[in-house]
Image (cartoon, rainbow, N blue to C red; front, side, top):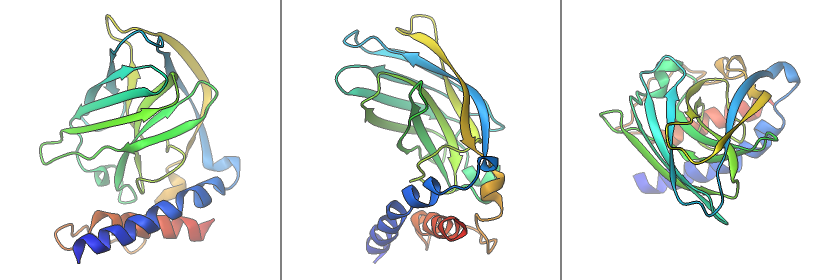
Length: 209
C-alpha cells in the first residue's frame, strides 16, 4: 500500500512542476544573483570540485565531474539537515546544473540520511555549468529558489575554468512562504510518504498560478 501511494504521489509531483513554475508570475517573483559556472574540458577525464556551504546549514561537499558526450556528476555532501529547518515550505534539496546562458537542469533530489550525509549520481548534456544545491518545496521544480545551500568552487587541481554568470534569476522564497505547508502540518514520515507532502506543496503552488 505504501509503495502504491509513493508511486501515485510521485506521478502527481512530476506532472505539475513545468506548468506551475513556467507560469511563475511577474519578475517580482525573481531575484538576481551572480553565480559561478565551470567549463570542464571534454574528454579530459574526471575532476573534483568543492561544494561550499552558502546558507545557514553546516553543509559542505564535493562533486566528481567528467565531461564527455554526456557529462557525469557525482555529488557527496555532509551536514544536510532536514530542509524544513530553513522554513516549513521547504521539503527537498535539489541539485542543479545551470548553463552560462541561464538554462537550469534539475539533476535530482539530494536526500540526507540520519547523519546528514547524502549522495547523488546524475548526468547532463551540459559541459559548462554552475553546480549548486537549493532548498525547494518539492523535488520536481523546474527553476531553482534563492535558498542556496551549496555551490561549486574550484579546488587545487580542478580541471576547468570559471565563468561568472551575472544576474541569474532565482525564485524568491517569499513566493513559496505563503503557499508551502498551508495547513501547518508537521511531517509524519513513518506513516505518510514525503512525496505526499511534496505533492501537496506542488498542488498549492499550481493553484496560486
